[in-house]
Length: 148
Ligand code: RB5
Image 1 (cartoon, rainbow, N blue to C red):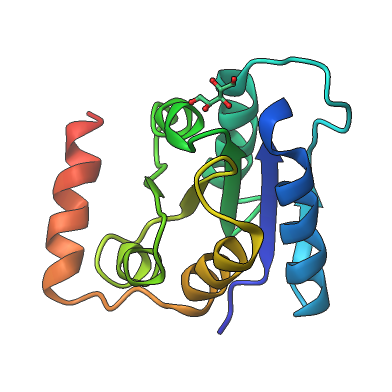
Image 2 (image 1 turned 180 degrees about the vertical axis):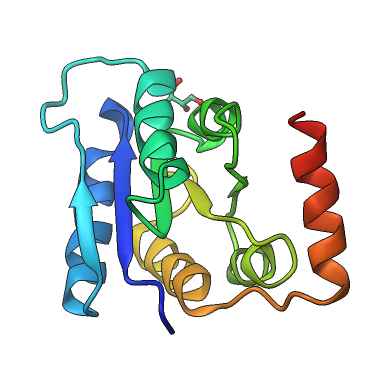
């Protein structure tokens, strides 16, 4: 595996899970950039999804993981950033497949949906899988073409 830099962000609903993911990935040798937030004060998931997505899109991180209550809102925000392919996953199969087939560069998780143990398994499935290319590359290129 060559990808080793990962950026994490969340909203207020997901700080403990995000911090747990950060520690988990750091222990596995990932260079983790955790961009917060650090307080549980109510905040707005779009800006945190956008901030992490911009770091990935700029090539300053190889992958990104973003977390909110459901994972849905922060995923929607991240996918508005050009070059981002982010999926919400609540199972390990999907987390592996969005890397292998969709070349997803970001994963979104719902802290109110998945318990910590499953979330870390999902993170492992996502971060250990690689894009398979081949016929999938044409389809991913079609997604990119939609961006204009
Ligand atoms: C915050 O209450 C909640 O709306 C947010 O974390 C997320 O679930 C939105 O998609």
